[in-house]
Image (cartoon, rainbow, N blue to C red; front, side, top):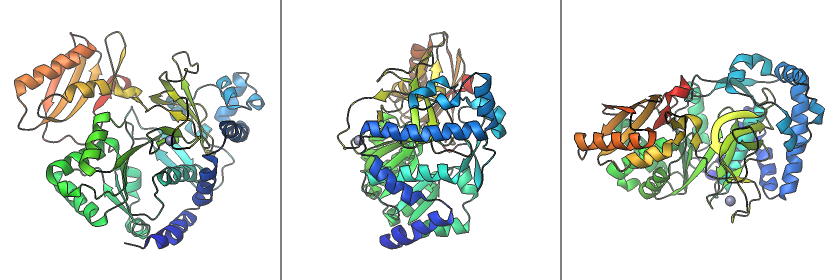
Length: 451
Ligand SMILES: [Zn+2]
């Protein structure tokens, strides 16, 4: 283990400098701006927005032509409320016009990245150093809310193919120098989990960072096979990438005996919000303007769920202006007891592809299905895939307490109660459910939307 002060003050800044990112000075700015008066935060957003809109108009052919054809004068977009004058950017538009979304004047390194494709085909996009550092700084700030600093021992149970492809020897050494360990979330067999448990036991990390579903699976493994790991994650487990179900959270807390906090964002849009120790979800307002829209694309009132549409104020190589993320959330009013003045949202309730559809198109949240199936005795893991509005396929992993006849009857009855009595429910049994290609544990998938 590298001494904390060396990792924090020497190796971590050196890593950021080598990568050409000024994450640390920007992080210091965020530490100040998180206590601004809400009006000052909006002023800061407005100033950044004006600059971004001028940039996109001058340098991105897609935005320039789209706005000109729609008769929009971008110089009239001066306030975050003026964003409503601009069209919404869809995933399909990004797929079709990717190169025209790229800023023609861009200098410096850009990284091609892509989403996992969990809601359909993967989305390829570009990220520059500026966007990267804004996410890193927002994460450093959020970790600071839990008393953590770069260089503190940490374990990442992560499976992004992009990171793993580059996870060569050099990166392993770099991780070691900043007290970070990377474990592959794609490999979750019992023997691998035992090995990971050994690493965590040895490292005694202050935090563990993983996909929500992977953390839950790891917590279950710890409870059943390695209870001595209780308390070895000394501060907090950060869950991201997919919705953290309430019962996952309580099982993780019980098995690992640490706090749990959720990071909400998306690879293409950035780090949108982070849960604080008071369990509020604070927006990264200096980096992102978030809109919650109803079915008519109008702003949804506070507490009303709607589509999450974001504008990333720090993405210059490929600006994301009014990007429809496909997520569902609601704005939350009031002040948080933690003292931060950053705006808040309610706990994100999932993504549109995590909702199943009844025959008339009503959306049923995956959480309700999860709540129903939680009560099935002996059901260890499952994945519900809706193939059509009248057919659902359920993959099941069961243990010795499971009784096929009763189990199947309950599962069928619960799903039909949600989706309609005529719904065909097909069940298949597996020894182990492989993670989704993204590394995430998808427990409900709407394949109608994905197809
Ligand atoms: Zn708070």
